[in-house]
Image (tube, helix red, strand yellow):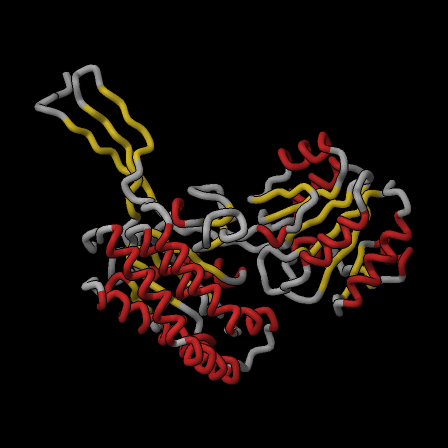
Length: 398
């Protein structure tokens, strides 16, 4: 286990990393072009996540800079207690130790995830996908330059250049201590990690997010939020399903306008039996489609009889990530938000805000759909465990 670096050293490394990303901006974009040209798959969402342009480099720099400015999440007192025998008891945050993150496609994770882990005193093992190998290796090289400049060991950020068989073997019998694993990617990757891992896994779950348009909805807000929800189809916070209240005033006009808007953005519109029949849309093949995360230019519209039915349907089919209610009725919104079993629930706002940076964390390691130990975006302050510090002067328990 690496000895915890001082907060000054950790911050200096992060600031140096931000500077190196700026200096190497053109090289990073050029290397990414090699990865993009080499990608032969047909997964449009993976290709979208793979791309790095000036805006994406800006995001990486901002992530490293912001992390350097944040308070140290290690050693924060959570609880204190003076025992009747005179012992002083403290509970403080502590680093996990070593975190393995397995991810597909996104080279920015190599900056943001490593930065969050490093700032919170953890060693990070990065296992990226082969589709982004060239850029990942370059970014890790920059991490090592930043660490070397401040006399810190390269061990803090390590890249595992493993194929699938080697990854499975490492998960089943790690050649070094691993305290936590975070898989970031599709359902197949998550299932693979859960099956083979021998230490705790935080599930960075699938999306399949819902918007419920209540009878008292502002329909202009509803359309804006649904369209925004499909603005980045590769994101886990994208909208895939829309439930429309059966008794929505001017329902026909609203649905026709929504379909027209979605088609403007080249989104394939499917529907349940009732809506498909009434609006001449492709009917979904089975109810199982309600469970699918699309990561594609697709959306399903359905009609729903009540708020209770909407809540039940979302809890049955959604990925546990994010859901929205569009309504002017605050009381109905409160019931919806309290009873929908998702990591993030919204009233008249887009699911696209389920993101560490947007929700005030400054960045995220992943977005967890697990309930232990953190739900939703996992930020700097969540990438710690805790330990007890007990000070005495010879106390023994009778």
